[in-house]
Length: 132
Length: 132
Length: 132
Length: 132
Image (tube, rainbow over all chains, first blue to last red; front, side, top):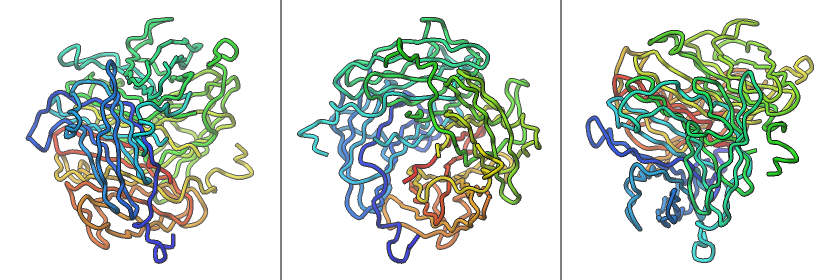
């Protein structure tokens, strides 16, 4: 780990394409808002020195895919993208099954997390996404 | 990411065989039904242009495997398959340990999620399955 | 998927060595027993035609490893092994951090799940283990 | 599994670099303390015979990375490192999105777990980290 010669902070790591198969935004929230809102996060690390230009394609059960949703993650930055917040080209429907393909022009790492506050006590699930 | 030349929406991604080792359908549900039912989802993305013909074999603790359970996931579609809903060749018993091998004729991505509502406040767990 | 020539039910899949880094058995349980007991499961699929002879080595924070714990998973069987139940060469202490290396003589797939019922409403977490 | 010739307890396994994309330390805890404190664990196994000298770099949304945080995991030991406890070069802020790159000079295995006790009933999520 030659951190003096090449700080780990400056190296792009990961893969350029990632997949999340189980996407589903809970249709309701409970508890103090906005803190305890139900959401799904696509958490992205760009550890490299170049901006990561990222396209997300969203696949559904019974219609054509939506996208690309475009985001840029700056060099040496983490972005925890809430799927709930995407609006262009269209919002992701809540209470609908979907999958996501994440495409980047540089190496990134992607992790998927769902926070479900439909009931009074939250549930959280997470997994590193699948690197293609 | 040459989305203009080859939209990510048209490329098969993943692997053809996936394994889930921890299958277990909770034996009870609580809360408003059908929304809060206890179930296990095998969530499948077929991002390609060909239908995915998929066989699931289910392995148990103390008897021979059951299957194949056959499903087709259309091109460019996500299917969140509830293990609870499988009936042919036989239903998956609840409150019984099992594992699943998912076999496809094209590349897919598989994620496994359990929703457990035996108690008043749900628990959710998820993981990308193991690609063989 | 030539299921007629080689049923997926008869093929060993996976890897021979797997690692779980976050082992921790909750020190208490609540709710109806034995159903709602706090435990950790090492869930193993042996999809092949040979018995899987498996050694588990358990690593701790401040003492030498314990093991090997030996189990056999029969051909075409799933075993959801509760770490709580291991007694030979010694029980795994509760409320103690540990990691597990799972060694098999044939290919298997391993998934790790924790069920925590210390509080009235359970929490569940899971991940496919790391294949070496 | 020639455990007599080469005990699994003496072999370094895993990878030298691991990534966790979804880091977030919950800003509050409830329940009996210190047991039920909200925290994130970076759980590390060093199954080998050499000490693992490990650097963690922490990436944020809107500032330069912090680190390296340096830890040593002794041979044949498991360390469940609480991100909450890191203080040098600076504490990790709570309620702030981050990612972590874990760099080791020998092979290790890393798993990430979040325990969220903001509400009365805990939530737990876990995933094997991404091996670079």
